Length: 147
Length: 116
Image 1 (spheres, one colour):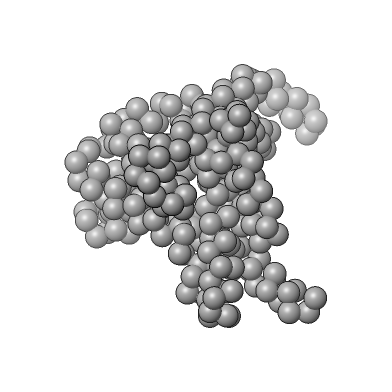
Image 2 (cartoon, chains in turn orange, cyan; image 1 turned 90 degrees about the vertical axis):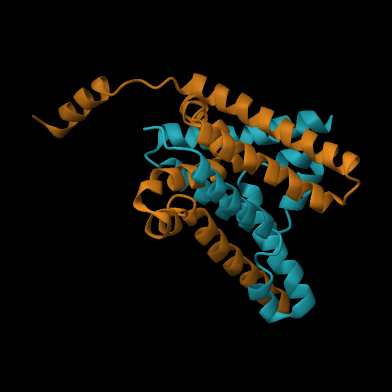
């Protein structure tokens, strides 16, 4: 069998994902989370009379808390399966990644389980974030010296 | 009006993520990592602050905001303390998110049990 024919057969048998439907769901769910984020931001800055930086930090803490709580209760996995990028691109995805890794390795004990594996999924976000932020800032600073 | 902007901005970022997820073999981990790097890049060119002015909280919710906060804190600390500020101040703004995520997920893991 030639390679091209084989590829055709593989293509015919791979399940067709409903890309349009997935995209629309991700757009709506993600947008809705953005609206919740802005609503919380305005609520906190009005209710507690704090600066916008503190209000945004509180908003992020609230979303992380909700993400962890819903993952712990067991709803979040189904929701992520349903809306995919709509939930893992916002900060709730970060909370979900940490919480599910922590729960998964809980049975291996406190230190070797929870302690060692908490950042198993979310660690790449922090590591690449730090490396790229440092590199880009260094480039900007060096360019700023010459220009 | 800013609520509409927040909806459009956050939804658009998730839409890009979903399109990448559907059409390539990259996993969710690859995409979130990529978006953090993009956020850091956009902030080092001072573009991301305009998104926040335009979309408010909608621009702070996606994971790109994490990269933005890392870069933003590093640049602010550089302006105050010079070269060593890049290292000492990198986590200034993201510390809230990381610390709260660690503490919350630790204590919640003591309460909840994994479901399959």
